[in-house]
Length: 160
Image 1: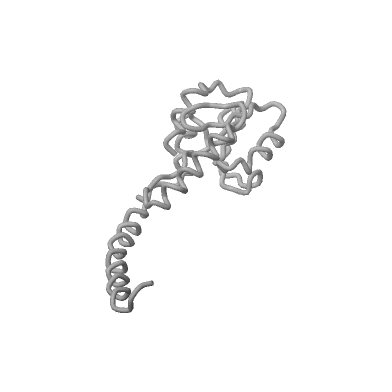
Image 2: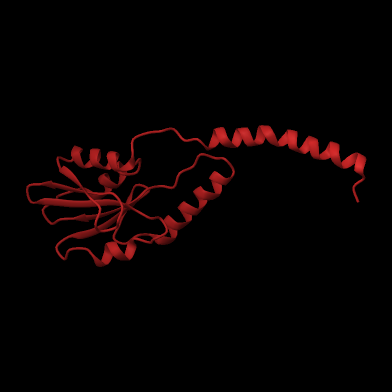
């Protein structure tokens, strides 16, 4: 058992030592404000010569439609947990190819375990005040009139 004369100084010292740790956590937890991922996504589509407009009906999150001539592309940031995967796959128009972009690679289906693990690892890192964000997962419908290099596009979407 703690003696009354020892417990109070130990508690006071612990509280005093916790203040710098709390301050460091608050400061380290702040992230640099940059453009919204949707704005960067619109910029990437614009660089490909596509005129963009917002669309929110499919996954109830901000997404973009890009069009130029016969090329039509739909792109949206989806959950790393895989919550939007089935919606994206089952809602795909029959003439469009479904592609998921994650960490600089293009996939025909969302690599759910990899995206889930990436998201959970970033949550764990943030709990230790490490400013880590999960890698973006971008779902896309690519129309048949879009001659896009999927590997190059995946690399360009890595830094959203």
